[in-house]
Length: 221
Length: 323
Image (tube, rainbow over all chains, first blue to last red; front, side, top):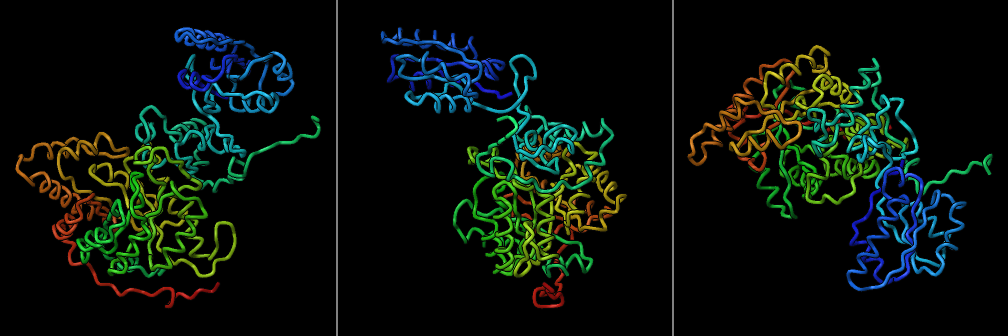
């Protein structure tokens, strides 16, 4: 899923300073699962905004709404109506959700309340870690199901580099060396023959380097 | 001869090679480059110029290589994949060769989190092994990575690094084989303090026959003080300094220069031992910000004077370009 985390409250507060009527818009997709921008977080943020304004004796009218998915136009139709006379939408969705909301609700500014951080997994409750860079050309078959693009700090295709120490990456002892993981896994699978082949240069044209990407599937239209 | 560089000629003649390195200045000071290179002249067969090592901005390796080449030193242009994509790497290889640089060392590069611009976007379009293969293809096939023909080939000796002390140890000789398969003509290793472990790695290398397919230059860095030794032991990834070496540095008298003297002594002993290891074809002396130590090491280890080998003009000489 897409992992996001809430922006610093001070930053949100500063961005909202010119406004007195706000719609806080949550999303029931990924940001609900990673507890960054679901209905619960919408409620908590709305309360915090009201308290902060009250502390300074300033008015604010905060409405709350959480839609199925902000990345799907179908669920954004009621938003303009629900926004009523709100001056601004504070979206708690990922960057994709914020943008589609902005495309659909043209008359209002849409501000982000979270930072979209990565495509990843929940390692355990409250701990999320990156697993995929959406390079558009999945290489997992050759690397034992562990991604060198996302898991190696240098995205090295023929690792590990000389900085791998006791299973950790040179950048931090908190970061596992992606290539150590790949080798451990290939050994467990009895497929170290895959390691001995020089992996070719990646074709980054399928990644963001090829420009903004788009998929059209006519059979679904 | 592939490049006609002095380093290649020294190795081809069967001599025990000596290379060293210079870190370019953090500025445009040409004299700083010349001063360092002058300390090495006559004591090394070739001198590496580092490429923004530890991700700290310095004068470009190409420019500093060109300066020392004009002084008559054989330059090894270090090139990292961190800062340039395949377009810029190939362009700089062609440019470096055009300036007379005949050796290149292909590296991944330290991650930018170590440096002075941690906010930078890194590149890592290709990795060091792919870079080796790319330069070899440019030289031997006259082709760019994209497939187009080159107008004039860069006749460079292609080098790569190896760190026998990084993990997982079991894979290290195997990864070296990949670099050699890609086309590495010479290898410069990470600095060696743990000689038994280096010997173990070299045994694997020799058993695989890799020492016959490339020239392995063993890395040596003289320690300057106990402080430096303990910092390297604890804070530099992939560095292995055994307790007995640390202990020796710790026990030197407090007198000025005693640490440095002991460091030089350890390094000379190391070189003497490396000379005896099967498959080691030379040493790469990395005296970090201490270039004057190189002279002492080379003399102390009986590696002076350096052989005078006739340089080959490959571009205009015995190797004809058929392309």
